[in-house]
Amino acid sequence: MQRMTRGAAVLCAMLALVAGSAAKTKPLRIFSIDVEGGQATLIMTPQRQSLLVDTGWPGFAGRDAERIAAAVKSAGLKRIDYVLITHFHRDHVGGVTQLAERVKVGEFVDHGPNQEDSDVTREDYAAYEKVVAHAAHVSVKPGDGLPLKGVRLEVLTAAGEHIAEALPGAGEANPYCDGEPEPAVDASENARSLGFLLTYGKFRLLDLGDLTKRKELELMCPNNRVGKVDLFIVSHHGLDQSNSKALVDAVHPRVAIMNNGAHKGGSPEAWQTVHDSPGLEDLWQLHYAVEGGKEHNVDENRIANVEGGGDGNRIEVLAEPDGTFSVENSRNGFRKRYSE
Image (cartoon, helix red, strand yellow):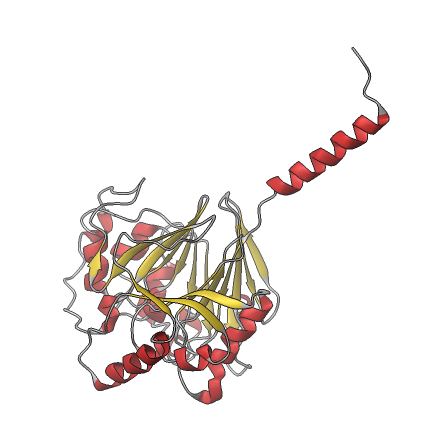
């Protein structure tokens, strides 16, 4: 057997190093941005494509648009590839005009025209229409996706409809449906929320916007069409009109992030449902919920904006394709890792 020459050995070592570097995966990054009880979640894929879910409130001298722009800069991005609007309420779509003045947007995604009969929602939808008239725009329905590389986004709910068939690996009978009281019909845009599942390898993120209980039960009963998830963006900022046990307990999240404000969301009943969900390792909150008191708030290490402190802190997630992920509080640098 011939011995390898020194030059050949060096070459092999270099090739192995390059192969190892190529094989090393980059994380999926998720920024839960503080927009004071609205929603703005920035997602950056390992291939540096970007998706912003909702734009927070209008006004406040561009406060929410500025916070989103700061997260975009922190991620090292020069633009947002997709802005996905879950529904046309002011705390979700209101910041579009101010955001478009600060950050370049590739394409807007929504569930189709506004379906709520209210003056304020018509006003906000009209402002949104003015922005998207000068941009690429697509409306999606359940079962659709977006052309994101390395990750998969599946639309689960939109415009009051939901996927008809269970996702692969899901479809089992949902025992948490039993005993759920029949929710009231919701004629608002909340019930039309564009909800999705984002998958990166084994890691699964669920965001259903402000989907309310009647639509949650239609999606999850009698069979669980979604399956289990790793990270759950708590629906509707943690309000009682959403977050039925039939949804929360069935998707069995390992970690949940509640995008509540100090005086909006984080309702004690919904907080308790999420907190007690079987298998939940941790709940994180964007704000201390004043209504909940000490009994219905998590430890301050997992609250981005505490009572009496400055606002604007965010929660950041780094997820690996093996299902491992970490969550960090930008206020204090507290970070926790969740193994597969």
